[in-house]
Amino acid sequence: MELDFRKNPAILNNMLDVMADGLFTVDAKGHIVAWSTGAARITGYSSQDILGKSCHILEGQNCKGFRVLTEFLENPTPYPWGICNQECKVLGKDGRELYLFGNVSIIRDEQGQVGGAVGTFTDLTSFILNNQKIAVLEEQAKSRESFQQLIGKSPAMQEVFRRLRLAAQSDVTVLLTGESGTGKELAARAIHTLSDRKDKPFFAINCSAIPETLLESELFGHVKGAFTGAIRDKIGVFQAAGGGTLFLDEIGDTSPLLQLKLLRVLQENEIRRVGDDRGMQVDVRLITATNRDLKVLMAEGTVREDFYYRIHVFEITLPPLRARREDIPLLVHHFMSASSKTFRREIGDIAQDALQRLIDYNWPGNVRELKNAIEHAFVTVNGDCLTLWDLPSEVQRPPRSKSLKPLSSQVEPSLPPDEEARIAGALQQTKGNKTEAAKLLGVSRVTLWKKIKQLQSPPHA
Image (cartoon, rainbow, N blue to C red; front, side, top):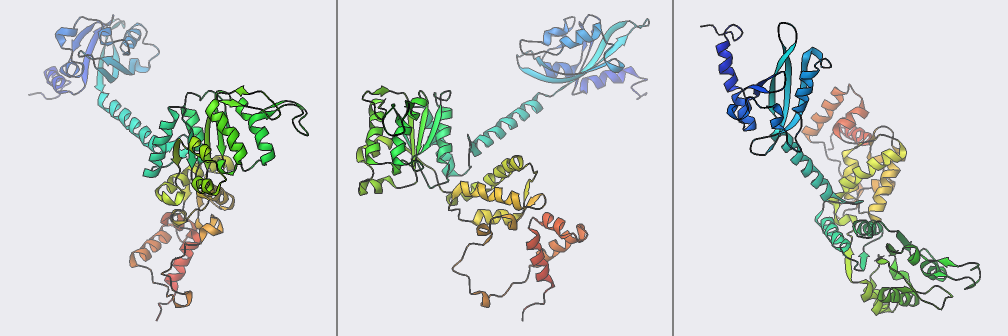
């Protein structure tokens, strides 16, 4: 029996029935002449459904591709070797959208005229849809780790993100609390950006940075002649932020008198410029923030009780960085990416011991201090990898442990055998280049140098 399918066409018939791909032929006008079992399995159209029909039967409102076949038959010249490769989306018999990749080759008669075409197609639907699902999941993962410009995957930050979304859905007065450097202004901007006021102005005022004598004028404005130096009328930020959001940071540093005037704004949506005897309506969403305990200030008499309860409608507390250490690697890589653009230096790696020290450090200045530490490292780094010794000196020092004995009584432990082997292997691989070996091991050059010195030192008695 002849098994060469080129010599025995009968074998080709059997091959066509077992092929996973679809095979078809069309005449010169694009009408389907032959339709394989694979083509029927992929599209749902049997030979009886489709023979003699135009290939456009596979096209729907959002599904195009086979129309190119007609153009190809009419003008095959632009396609090298008379073969057209095409990725398209077609409509299956059951209404499903199918993603196909096809190859079509021109068939010519004895006179060289186009007599039709033969084509095959592969079903990419599951592959495309799975990739789309992966992309969605990746985007969801990213959104879980960041919210506007706030970053964190920890449960504490996920709760912050949830409450920020709730706050954005209404005009409720929000009080943001948390230590300095935790991102309270970013949280306020996130609320504004997600709210219906997003297309209106956002103003941020630090109440502790402006002298009390000027703060009232800054907030409410003044009329000409209201005080010495008031040579013309001036609008305040409440007017400038009309329709938008005003963020007042360090609200606990304002005087009881100014709190009373802010209370009028909250209750009546009305301001009065300094030196003016007329009130003025305003439409502003107020968000306040503090790093102090307002209840303590209220007990001391520096914060009015009625003012406290009016701004404390919906509180969102931003956690300190030391309470969400699992977010530190995310923040480090975020700030490294930002610093690469700022300093125009492509530095994407950080030594493992440097990253661990960043995780262990207590961060009294929170996220702001971490950002500054990464920028400091970009100034001092030599090479394309941040090391422990590129970090600020206060971060380099390991945290104190009560269990540590005095230095004079400490005995330097010997290295574990597996670590010795790793160091030796890295040095062999880099031909003795300690800088490259440190990168392979994920440690700084100084750390590697100390470990090598430790290996070379005689054991302690």
